[in-house]
Structures are given as structure tokens and as C-alpha cells.
Length: 198
Image (cartoon, rainbow, N blue to C red; front, side, top):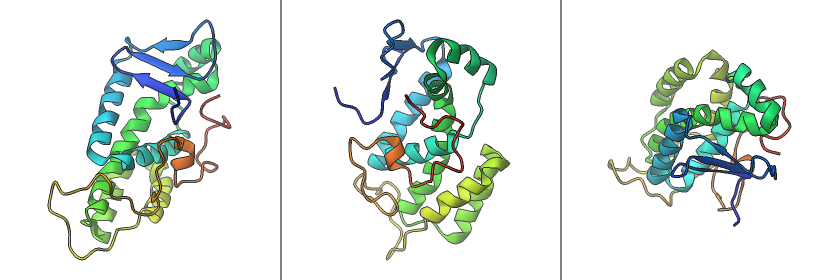
């Protein structure tokens, strides 16, 4: 089976699979991690609403979340068993989905041509408060890439087309990885790991 990213989360079976090729732990049971399963349900709902654009938002959120040092003690314990990159990807998943949902709030309005400079600044203030001050810089970089879309008139509620693709994400290929889809540079906000998945 070919998939875009070297990991897959099956909420139905509560399994996190990746390409680690670890014969002792071919997949990770996440049944005892309700926050990971809840995050997957939220991500799927976002895909239903935004279509391919949701993948690009998740990619941008993934780039942003790589700076997060979530649950360092838990990460250390899991990293001993699974490896650093594998453990970090799993533990950061709920936070990554949270960031993607914050980005989606602005992106829905932007794609519907309802986003103004003032409403974007309001979104930025709320998002900076929700995610924390260290995200201010990367949110500003994201806003520079995701400028309001000029249009003849705003669309009515419910008319957001799933096929709408606008800059910077004008091409979202099914097999592009999150790293390839992100419009953000991975260097300034990346974690100490070179790649999120090994």
C-alpha cells in the first residue's frame, strides 16, 4: 500500500503504524491514549470540511509543532523503546491537529473570500493567545504565505468548494508528504531531529 507519509493512524483499530521496520513493535497501540484518537477524529472532520486543503494545513501545523517539546518525560521513556523520531511524532500528533484547527479557522474564511486585514489581525491575536507567545513569529510567517484572497464578493456560508486551491498551496498531490506540502521553512522552527520520521 502506498501512502503519502511514513505513518498512518487507524482510529478504528487504535493503531499507529509507521515505516520504522521494527519487528518487535510493528505498530503502536494507542487505545489508552484518548487524546490521540480524539485528535484523529478532529483531523478527519477537518478533511471532510476542507478537502485537500486540510492536508496542507496539517503539513503547516506539523512544521510548526516540531518546535514543541511536549511531554519530555514521556517522550524520553517512549524514545528508549521506540526511537526519538517515532516517539516525538506520536506524542506531538494531538498538538499538531490543534494547530491545524487554529489555522483552519482563518483558511476557511480566506478561501471563502471573507477574510479582511482586520479580521486576520483579530484571528492572529486569538491564535497567539491560544497557542502561546512563542508561536507569534511562525503564525506571522504563515500569514505572509496565506494572504487574503481578493474576489468579487464573499461566498455564502456553505459554498466553500472542496476543489478550491489558492496560493501558496496550489498543488496538493495525493502522495506528497507533509514535509513537501508545507509552505513554511522547516529550519527555523524544527526540532533537534532532522526529520520527524525515520
